[in-house]
Image (cartoon, rainbow, N blue to C red; front, side, top):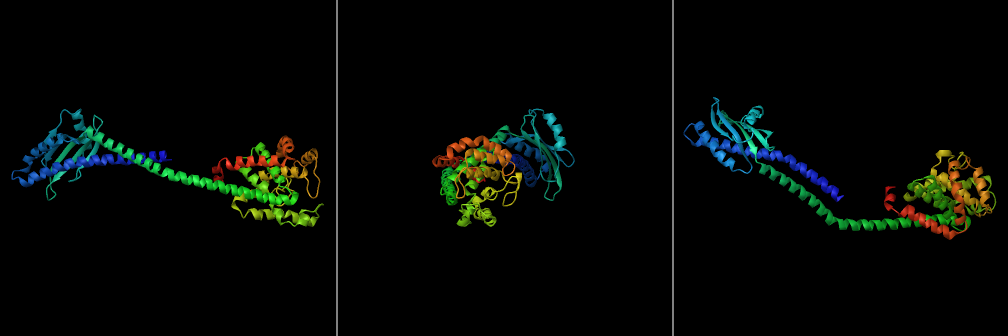
Length: 420
């Protein structure tokens, strides 16, 4: 950033100085012409002789001064009285293409009453020149003579201007770099501190997430292994289905918190060993709304609503709570519905014994297109067996695998989390 800023500042200074280039040259040229005009008027004021006869003396004096000037000099100068007679003249006949310049001058020089008219030109040597036009007036504003000339800027003066521009650009760039260098240690320390605080905050959020999920999972099965497994299954299915990293982070939050609303369901319904009657089932369904109410009070957890609010929706629209169907159901919820039912079938619950692996797979296949997204189910059936064999009976394996998933999706690049 400091390099970019320094370049931008340097470019800005360059164009600023470059835009001042011509005005400065014009001002100095104007000064030379004004000196000549004042010299002529001074001669007219102090001499008792006709002032027209003394103009050449002023021109000669100016030629001596101009030839010694490091800035530039008159290549040609002609002063005529009101009758059109030339009363002062200067010419540098050795200047290249002198006659061509004089002819070109006739097209460029203009009058602006008693003010100097400067018209920029480019000389044969590539250096700037000015065509000069001026009406010389007396104290009463009457035109006494006209001045025409060509003023050449010395190459040394042009080079000096460019050196000044380069020095200004270099100084501005170095100043930006110096200021950046002085601020860098402070900014670096602040960013490091902010990064550490962000990691601590993320850790706290993740610990809270897992604590909430574990608390409700243990009400169902006295262990939080269900949350571990469904999260792992869901992440692997999402990866196989090509879900982006942000969507997988949302899925992980939703997987941990999918049943958090069950904390509001009374134990005689939640832990009933038999099948729920119609009234009890209506109460059980409200855990979705309770879950949404809980997570919507936390900004960091709100995106988990895709899973919390929709994991009981069915592909054919017969689910709850909103009766969504097919692509209306968020991808994360369609993924989670498959893994949640599979793990519920293969796990012991207060109201059932576990199904065998094959019985569970048969059930999933029968529900393709009804309960489950058939395309996602096909992907899941292609990856589920090794996952089930590894994690179904080994809670510690699942815990370690989940820790690696958390590291991969939440801690590999914390800037991604800020973007969300």
